[in-house]
Length: 77
Image (tube, rainbow, N blue to C red; front, top):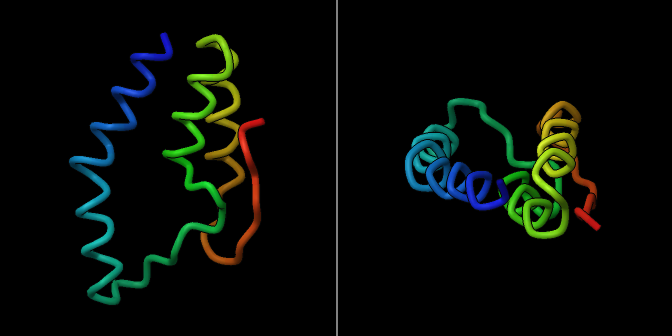
């Protein structure tokens, strides 16, 4: 299950993130990520540390807390 989560994150990084970053660079008004590490890095960490169902629950919770802008540290540990 962790491999599938990481595969999803890597495909997001390869396909969607460049589009998103391009929009932000053109000033479309898309703010930076507020968390450190980023949500995609958090998903990779969680998929390595926890069983699949726990990792998915943690990643979904993290995505629901995302309110772009500001900054905070939220490690998967």
